Image 1 (cartoon, one colour):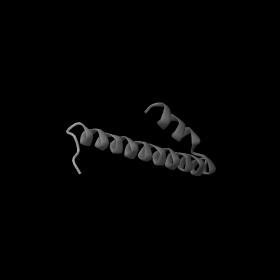
Image 2: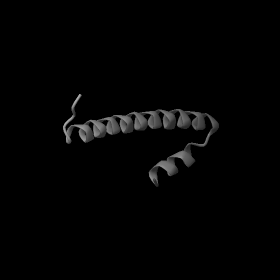
Image 3: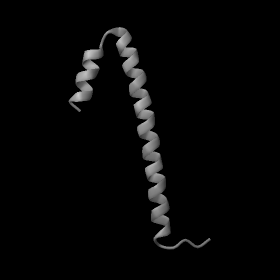
Length: 54
């Protein structure tokens, strides 16, 4: 199969963006579970300051 010179970087960039979106989604899910775990331990203030000063 022949790919144009502009086709391959475009497809690669699209895969890069999809990988980045999946990574961000997994990171948000991890942060959500981490926050709920820390809330049960009473460390909500530390997590709140960490997220606001980031």
